[in-house]
Amino acid sequence: MHSIAEKIVNGSEYTVSEKLLPYEKNLKLLVSKIKSEYPEVVDTEYRFKIPISGIIKTDEKLAFSGFIDAIFKNEDSYQIVDWKTDRSQDYGAIHRQQLEAYKRAFCVAEGVKPEKVKVAIGFVGLRRAINTGKIEAFLDNRQPQKTAFETFSNKVQTILDWKKDPNSFLKQLIEDSRSDDVLWRSIAEQCKAEMVK
Image 1 (cartoon, rainbow, N blue to C red):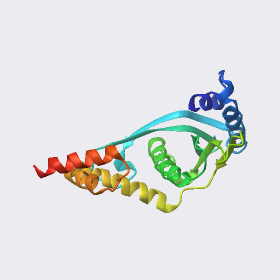
Image 2 (tube, rainbow, N blue to C red):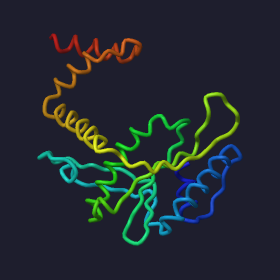
Image 3 (cartoon, helix red, strand yellow):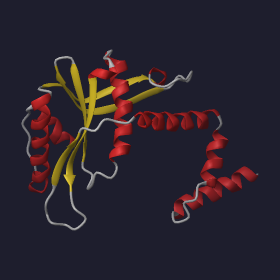
Image 4 (tube, rainbow, N blue to C red):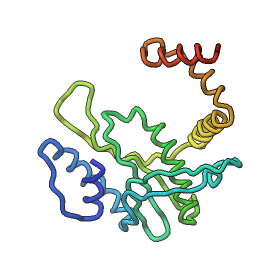
């Protein structure tokens, strides 16, 4: 879908299988809606790589990299869009955490003021729990709450702590209760046995 979305946004030629026609229709609908407010295409599959210290407070010398599906512009305002084929909007809050981090990375990489950038989730594959054969689209323009980036920062800090002290990662792995996951249990048991030695 990302390849088709890129071609639709850029106005390139493409072919699509019959199975993907509903998604193509939804992508065209969403792109049209976005372009009505942000008519200029800045980039698709925009790759960024910045020091993690550019967006969170740390002395670690790690890079933060990723891809932004599409960036649109209207004068000096931008909209970053992430295409999602999720069946529902249930994970919107998690997607907004990612988008907030990507927004901050984009601002650092391009020298853009954060207040000039909005984010959106382009849901192109929404389906009801009971299959009606209908695949819908929705452009979720809700902006991340302040806690979204705090949650992201906390997750990054946990990873940085694990980097400094790998045993803390192993201890947390052992303590995590995923009793229904056989592979997880096996790994945790092996870690526990190795740590005892």
